[in-house]
Image 1 (cartoon, one colour):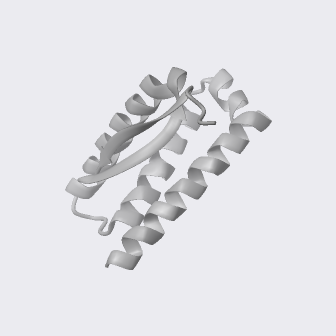
Image 2 (image 1 turned 90 degrees about the horizontal axis):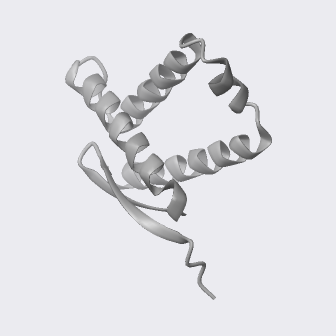
Length: 107
């Protein structure tokens, strides 16, 4: 039986389309996160100092993490240590690794 509370969401980052399955109640958050990530990655790519999708993705992740930590938003930092969030971050890292290895194999 298919879980009807989860649906694929289509996002585009650096001109590449990805289909990510997520709970319906997290769809808007995922789309906003994708928009912000794409904006950050475009900014890094357009600077002309970093080349390659993987390097741009790593730099964007570092920048976003640094901004989060520098924001002084203690509730956001506290969430980062929540076990459930850690599991979700680990899941996202696995997805990113899968996408990056797909990109590498196409190069």
